[in-house]
Length: 135
Image 1: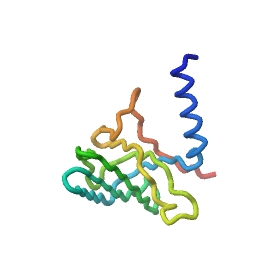
Image 2: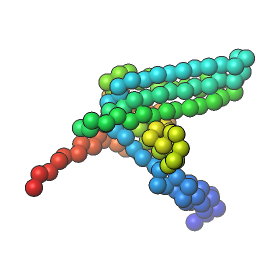
Image 3: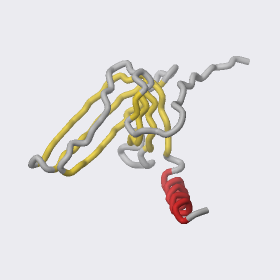
Image 4: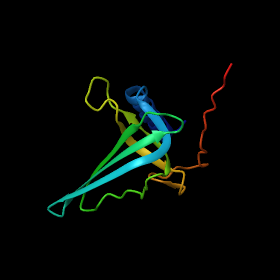
């Protein structure tokens, strides 16, 4: 194992140690999308996106947020419409905090348009349908 692989392995292990129990993934249809852009003195740009997703074959809803701050350039976000099928990967809020039920978005895969927020190497994931089995 080379030096580069050792450092990459160390970062992966430390990230999993810190966020491993909070990593989550949600697949479902978009109910609502709210995009807020704010610029301060044409220098600092802030982007806040709030998604409400209804998971497949479920009655509950999930709230997801995406926050990005950037100097000089506007942060970019993908176009998402109501009714699109998404796979959202992110981190749940810490237990006991006010945002414990919301998911902080790390990546979004739009299965309707086959686009990613952050590009993924390798094969594209397929939609997973859960089948209820009765005994």
